Amino acid sequence: MIDGFKRALVLAPHTDDGELGCGGTTARLVEAGCEVRYVAFSIATRSLPPGFEPDTLAREVREATAELGIPESCLTVHDF
Image (cartoon, rainbow, N blue to C red):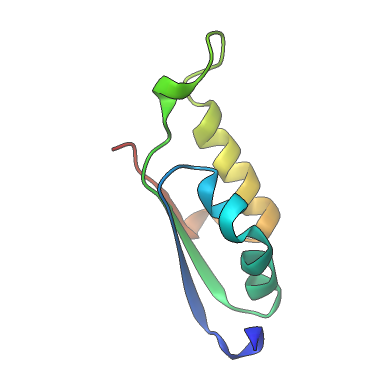
């Protein structure tokens, strides 16, 4: 069933929601040749504990989506 998809869009309210909510499916789609685009709407910098760099969550979402097989060109991160 995964093989039939050509494109998919992951919409994540926060940077880790896409990986936690559908990371396995996303990885399977990418593996099957599907073009997956990932959009995160908030990097939630105010939720970081003291001592963390402000770009921590933005950096982590880039690393996580790369691990899932999503190229950086298909990643959009907003900070609403």
